[in-house]
Length: 118
Image 1 (cartoon, rainbow, N blue to C red):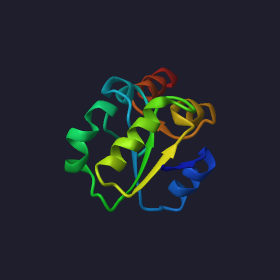
Image 2: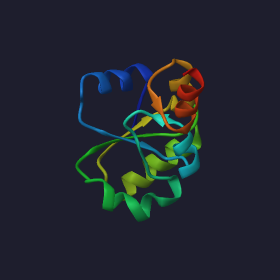
Image 3: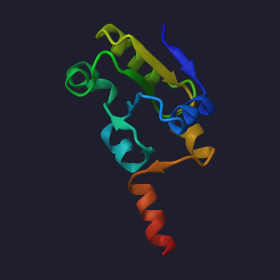
Image 4: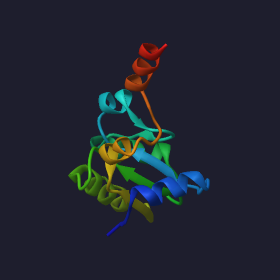
């Protein structure tokens, strides 16, 4: 089973430039609307098809989905593990917890907010 990290732990990892790849496992539309800064998108249904082309099996992979305890995060971690990724971590807070805490996000939602504010 993969390790679970909190919002505080993920933020620390980002702030200290720890080496990892942050993977949003939601569909492309959700990712384009808003995602955690610096994350990439591999939708849950595309992991088996796309992961090997994008990620090295030796990399630390941190997966996240929509909200705390979301099923997609657990399923994504299991898929990565079944493909031979050895260091898979689940960020259980998901987009909901990250945005509630006001942490860095990017995407179409943020661009609309910037335009509205100017």
